[in-house]
Image 1 (cartoon, helix red, strand yellow):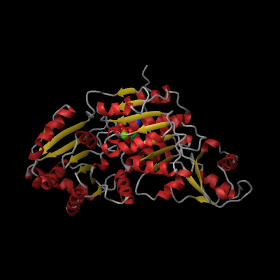
Image 2 (tube, rainbow, N blue to C red):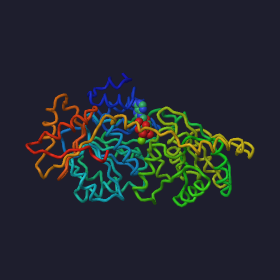
Image 3 (cartoon, protein in one colour):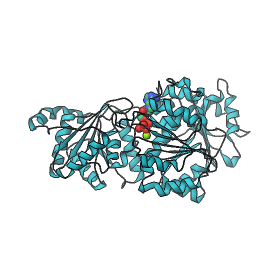
Image 4 (tube, rainbow, N blue to C red):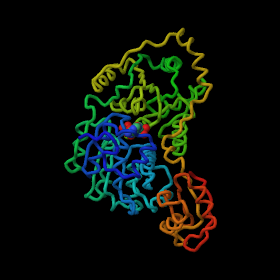
Length: 482
Ligand code: ADP
Ligand code: MG
């Protein structure tokens, strides 16, 4: 029997109420199939189109399965980019909010020591890029002896040349008694077979097998020579006038050049590529997710897995270097049942790649005639008006789960021999507070952070100013970081 409601799975109240807050009314097709398989702890290979809800397909059952009491990580999730690792951590944290699931993201270019301290805390799940994960495993700063579940997201990318050695090295270190699952929208048979090596009789799940591309996306292309691309881009964007748009280029230099051009022409735009420092990468990503600017110019670093609400248009300014890359790039639009548009520029030299691409995706792209000067001129006014107003700020839907949460700072931690039970014991004794109102607790050497849920933060704050913990009166105030 297919399970059409989240209530049909045996999920605990904690998880169900988080899904409710996230406004996930029904499991998507891939979730209907995958949730029971994970709950039974079976291995699996899952192919399902972009934007179909694969993260929650593993995130929901894993949040259900992990044992809260265990301090060492029980789940390892591998991803190709840092932005994706971070996004998955956020998704898991939202789903596991009321079970107080602690997830952490680890990736390169962030100080190792910082991650090392975070890894010493209680963490149920770790999401990370292979290089840094391996590094932590080899240095003994990520303990893996309790890892029961391994998720390889964007599996075809992870098992390809660039990552396979690191991924294999990680797998060799993990306990052999574990559940392993692969996920992607594009999963060639060859890769799936490679995956078999690490799995035990995996269940194969393929949703809408005809092709991996969302039928909500309208695909078209323009012929142009290299020299004409910029002016074509300008007239196409004027005519399309999207609310938000990602423009993909082949290299970071191409991204740098294009964003400069667009900036000079008054576009609200920013860029993302692997040559930027990590803080900038995250800042751009967050600003774009919030809707601070309309045009993101990016390399394929933004192609895989990144989930941004309401991207209405994706433009392949440079033709993708692999057929799979086309699928993932354009999969940034038309997510979660929404509609979207994908436009690709094709130069004469790339004609045969287009034919190959069409064979790969199983249908033809619609050829379009470049907008005429008259048409572009007619639309310029609307375009400029839109560029003058900031996009609607999007409230991150994950924030909805956290909206009645207040994080409190206490000036005592491990050094004062304080443990989570001491805090829980004290706070739960306050009138009107129950254990369920206490969220994630992070105890460091000298400080402790505690989330108070359900809008009860201010009340707990007030009480704790005059209530000792284990005989010690601590200073308490709202934490600066969210
Ligand atoms: P995929 O990994 O398949 O590309 P994601 O897991 O990133 O897709 O999910 C795409 C979007 O769909 C996300 O914004 C996610 O929050 C949303 N989503 C996931 N599951 C559901 C659901 N059951 N109902 C509504 N929206 C959902
Ligand atoms: Mg995904």
